[in-house]
Amino acid sequence: MSAQENKWGILYCPKSGVLRPRRRWEKIERCLNEKGVDYDFVQSENSGGVERLVKMMINNGYKTIVIVGGDSALNEAVNCLMQADKETRQDIALGVIPNGLMNDFAKFWDIRENEIEQTIDMLIRHRVRKVDLGCIRYTNQGGERCHRYFLNCLCIGLVASVIQQRRKTSGPFGWRKLSFIPSALLMVFQRLEYKMKLRINTDVIDRKVMTVCVGNAQGYGFTPSAVPYNGLLDVSVVHHPEVAQLIEGFYLLFSGKILNHKSVHPYRTREVMVEKAERALIGIDGRLMNTPVGPYKVMVEQEIINFIIP
Image 1 (cartoon, rainbow, N blue to C red):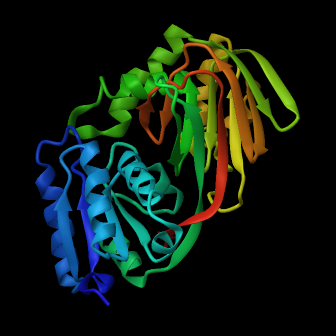
Image 2: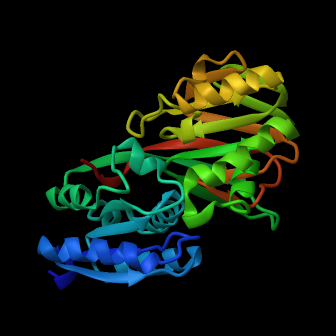
């Protein structure tokens, strides 16, 4: 048995836009030491570093890998973990201490950014649940067949454009609400829509659509009923609303009732086939991905990752 099997591997991803990111880690480090946790710590300076460092932890035999970061960092960690063989993957549990601009997967489990001590106690208890992953399978511009996994959601169209704009308008200290407000206003004034053709269950949707959100979990409010352990994806297809309906839509989105909006059409499925989505950006767990060439498929893989939950 390697020495790392009982030791946590902790990857710290500093939150962008924060004036003193080291202060956050110092609080976490103090709590870990007070509780006697045996761990090794590395820090990632960028998103590309997450994959490299998680791969290093896997190769060095760590069985508990904790990401101090947000949805994007978790996405990198999960995609790296899925490169390992099944036997190796089954022995590793992934945990999170929220520290990102978007922490929606942690929020789904009621893991809060400002509750460091409670989160570390939860990690120490080490209650593990197998969770589902969403997966997009597509062809890239080089003609290669590719795939990428997601924990929270995949968004096509306007929400992906908002993700792009958010990163340009991030508020001071990385505050999520301050960075979301100007991006959300663009949804009102730009009123973008995209010609799409989708196959969901027995339905064929062939029309202009504002946005599509495929949720393995809550999907930034667009798939509030989704859960990452039922082997299904929740899909919200948002048609083009009037301005007054957009204002109503913001209220329903923030109150968790977006499915009540007349322009939102919800589905539950194992697979979404996107035959056409002209000019539509794709966001996956809060980060833009390269636009696929031609049709692509979004599906679910059931109970495939070990995740530490409260």
